[in-house]
Image (tube, rainbow over all chains, first blue to last red; front, side, top):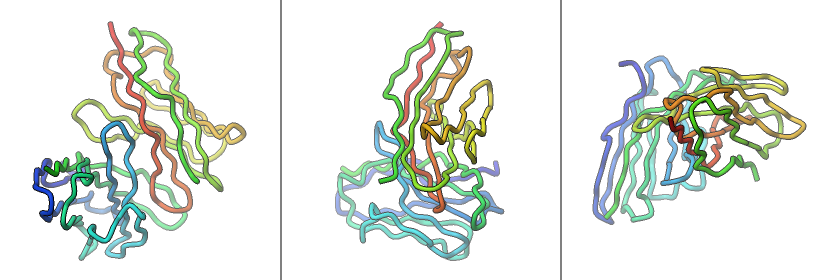
Length: 116
Length: 111
């Protein structure tokens, strides 16, 4: 399967713990995005990378959140000191994009986080 | 601010009925517009897109026309099937690369 993959698919943690999610994009895609989706809502943008550079971060991304894409391939999203309000589906997407060119974003299946 | 507004669901239709899901957007410039679909237990998939005014996107019998004058991108299908039951999201992207989504509309098609 050459689609976007995310691990783990489900994560249950206790409040205050740290969690890390991984996203593997489609191999030739240079852009990678993170979104968060809560129940009954559409996905909300968190951040995106072009190659290894993090080009934009939403104000939703508090200082407890950090994302990396060290070699321009896979990415990790870490949440420190989790809170119950962090419970959501975390979606990763990738695209082949260049400045001024809008290309389709392909989404992974998501990681569902539950903070107890 | 920039946003997408789509009709609230759930929308319940009988098979072979006509479908319209309304979507309007507020954005500066000339955004590209999308409809994404999320089938039960699956990830988001692009259904169709339009990148400039008056463009019509189409796929799997679904259509949507980019209407700049009314800032709308309504989704239509002439005859729905049970297999079309899913959540449909309207979205746009502008000069930044991020997608801005609506809240989604759940469609339930019954026999």
